[in-house]
Amino acid sequence: MANKQTINLILSRTRRNHVYLPYIKKKQYFDAIQEGNAGRISELSQQNYEYPTALFNKCGSYSDAMSKMHYESVCAASEMCVIAIQAGLLDMVAYDIRDQFVKEFEHAVSLPDLYDLVHGMAHDFAVKVRYVLKSKKHSLRLARMMTYIEEHLNEKIELVQIADEVNLSRTYASAIFKEELGITISEFILRERIAEAKRLLVETDLTIADIAERLTFCSQSYFTKSFTNIEEMTPGEYRKRAL
Image (tube, rainbow, N blue to C red; front, side, top):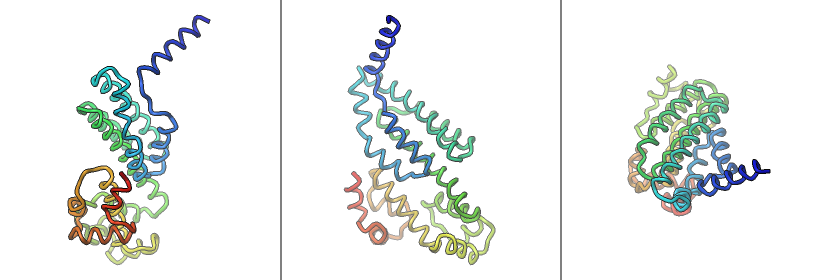
């Protein structure tokens, strides 16, 4: 009986001194990583934005809150790494992502910094898993071309560069996209840039003009027109709804 009382006392003290993200919420992150759904990670970042404040209110000091959140961040790195490997990501790639962010955690100077780093890590895991899932779903050549495009969205992308990535002619590379995806390479690039724009609208304070420039749209007006055609709302309207 005494042992049971001691255990209960330890548990009660532990609960008073920590603010844990419930497993049901953690599982949402794990599921998003397993599905390669980076957009879902962005949504979760917005939904749980009050977590740093809740942790601070629970702790006696800011330094105590930083210490606890750093601990939770390192734990999350290990957990997400395992989830990504189980989803098919090469273990060395997953370990590199984990180790990179664990080092960055050490240099965080605020709770929001740590919070953003954890979500940046989750986003990276999800993106890399998405590549793996695409390679299983599509031909290896298409998967490599899609990956090349996704990794160069902030640059001007030429068809010849995409074709050279897999040692194909421009005509044959275009034909693969049309056959497997039912859309042209240009349409795929535009959709990927709009998807990245949605992430930037939610996760950053960049202006619409800055986002248009970062994603190499020729003008803000063309970016807005393209975004509206695909999402049926302007970038500004999307940002307001997301926030």
